[in-house]
Image (cartoon, rainbow, N blue to C red; front, top):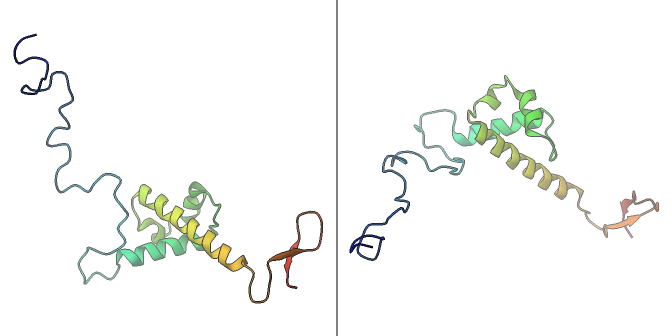
Length: 136
């Protein structure tokens, strides 16, 4: 080996990966797989903010009968043509918001089915595993 070959401490890397070219990610481009914006960066005089768009999008999905176990593709077909659904233009963002809504619906359902008041959470009646909550 010659004096500067081999990528030693003083020489350039030989056969190594130099990294992405400088133009690969321009400084103005959003980061790949970045978060979904939840606040408006638009002109404050705009009437529809990002929060309004997200709320309307989720409302359209709920009105279409979305449940915590719904499939995105099926619900998207039901909402096709609804301006509230189509206001979110990115498929990736639509799917992420759909999944977020499903988690919210599951949380609401879980809170709604929790025993209330004097209920002990004890399952009464029937031996087939299909009992109902009772108190006492």
